Amino acid sequence: MRIARKYPDLPIGSVDVSGLAPRDAAFAKALEQVVLQRWNTLHAIAASQVDRDWRILQGSIRTALLAGTAELLFMDTVPDHAAINETVTRVRRHVHQGAAGLVNAVLRKVAGLRGETLPADHPDARNFHEHRDLIPLADGRAIRLNAPILDADEVTRLAQQTSHGEPLVVHWIAAHGLAKTRELCHHDLVRSPICVTASDPSTLESQAGPDGPLTPHDRFGFFVVDTDRLDLRAFLAEDPTRRVQDPASAEPVAATSGLRPKLIVDFCAGRGTKTRQLAETHPDAEILATDVDRTRYEDLRRVFADHPRVRVVTPDGMREAIGRADLLVLDVPCSNTGVLPRRPEARYRFDASTLKAIASLQRGIVRETEPFLAPDGAILFATCSLEPLENRRMAAWIERRFGMRIRSESQRFPSGVPGDPPTAIHDGSYHAVLVRGDDSDAAPRRHS
Image (cartoon, rainbow, N blue to C red; front, side):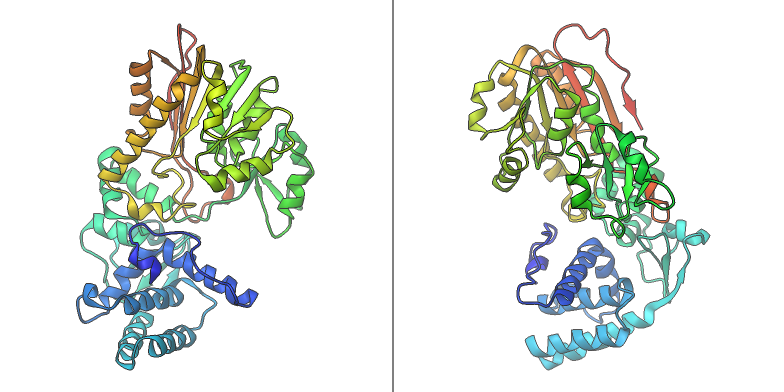
């Protein structure tokens, strides 16, 4: 109920598992994850089986129906009778008997809706958007419902089937076309793989192959981790140059490899993944890193406590870098539309006003940090967004505002859909390297 009251600003990791046995805690987290990932799908199905306006139901009843529907449709290890009985018992205990009867009736109808599960290679599983009775799954399969209960309008139906906010679907259709939007929405259902790389990726090849815990990704230098066969924490500790990173996330820093900075300011360093990559890419540079979020800042301090070239300072402490930064790294906040499998809550809160607010925040960060630049300094502007307002238009604004030139630029769209091998799946990202002065050596701009 606490989560539901905040919709569409759904929080992640809010479930309280204190006092629960480990298996119960794991189940609670799994249930929360499924509900957050498929909120709009669950709402469409559960609401279709209620004989009154969904909006007039008590919040406790709506949330019980969402959780029960999640167990019935998306949690294969939960028997139908257990999902229904436990949900009804909770409602009877915490709401009232009449509500328990309603929830029992609705969940039994939901269970009756579930028909066969189509295999990933079934033509309809990939073309789910053509059918009002298909729900795509994260592994490429699709559930066929026993009635065409999904919306007749294709845009609304796509939002229901893939659990996206309708404003985002409409925005993507305008920006990228209907076919690309279907692909993006389907991609956002994938289970994103954990990928690792290192300063020398060849050092990881000995653990790759049919019998190893690593599998080479389609993007050279990256490997997909089988977490059931590898202690990831111990593996990373063996070599400080190893890091967990998606291939698309690594592209921005790689684009700065032709620069020779002496001082790098990493102003939105997060938890330091790109900071580590910067240190490896520019071994002669001193790096000042910070983040305005207190939790991420403390994580940064712990990660780089003993690093010889990375100093973590407060945002106010960055004043020492004014006029000195050869490279200003701005991996700025964004709408996260390139990483929605990892950030499912961002699917629901997207709208035009939010997008404009984020763009305004980005401009504020650029204005605040531009004084750090040395006279011939460069900016790396990066996001994990697919939206031109946060990306290409922002880079063009920096060009005009500060008299800089785009030296190189790339928009990477996410890759892979449910049913594809993990080695074919990666996130989306954007970056632009901006410099002052002559840009005659500028690389071509890429959009892929």
